[in-house]
Length: 213
Length: 243
Image 1: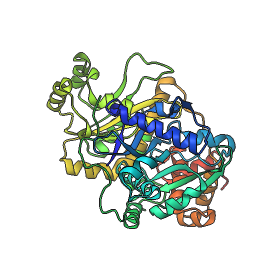
Image 2: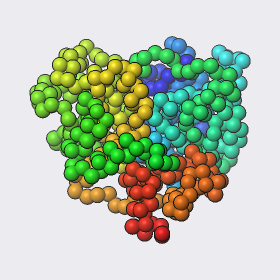
Image 3: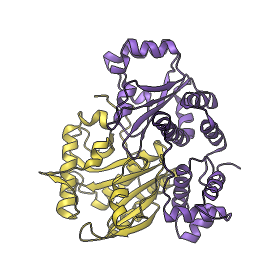
Image 4: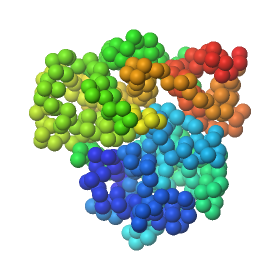
């Protein structure tokens, strides 16, 4: 199931959050070799201190993680503005209350293969993106800015997303990193559901998403 | 003209314009309440790590008795809305909140003072990491309220962000320096000034219409305007683009 975790709930999901930071370290530091901040076995940076919303795919007991990403409003400090500003100052300038950034999108390959052997990593990534569009539409977000390696763009296509590459920059890891603007709308949601064969919401349909700590 | 690309809808734009013309933040929250026919509207500027404010900056249409009671009963210590609102970044419906036993008295009391049974709160986070919380409430039914919010949440978020900027100016006395526009933003603005719509601009710049609208919206919000026509006029006035 997919859940969104906001700061009042970080404590309640301390285990899952730690799993997420471990996953991020494995993906972005170990595999992609991006220049990210690592402390021990976790990857965490100053944008995590802003109280972002994390979208997490986990088991019903919320102990095993399958995928996650981080959402922040572009009116505030954003990773993409800050990192692209040095190499490509005109790329990540979009900023409005209805424009958010998504970063650190990743899939836990081993957990996925063990518990969902029929779901490929690409498909899992598509589901994560579907969760992002659902969540964004619910909160009045019409555009999401995201960064990705060039080869990932075909996964976005396959997932049924509509997006523009705004530009790309070198100096992150082995490959250039692209910055893209993704449309968040009911139309994209329908398109993605049809393409991925998903009939209903991927979010756990519980009313009380928030638990004040 | 309804919802011109990149602009707010008619009702939203007219409320935004009235808010912008308001003499202060106190008047602004009243305009929002009356404009959308809400029970109440409240703007609360958070403490900032840089310049702590001693007295809380709260401008609200709540009855003064309620605001007094809120302080005397020290409800702010248990208020689940304020707690969630200053910790989170995403907007939330009050019905999403988990009400702890210690906040039960507050909720009953609030209801008694006509605060509204439904609420929607929008956290604001700016580039300097300053936070505020903008809340609107109503006595509408749940379904009606959710429909209202989804129709106007984007505009309410823009109004919240605008009031945040205005409140900081009220407190610290300075309007922010004129914002920097990127090349692409100026390009979109200049094409709009030439009468191109978002479809034309998208084709010229080889972008999707959604991304083009995102650029137009960024420009419009940086220039603090509710419509693209206003944004173009302001940009010409400030010589960001030429006629």
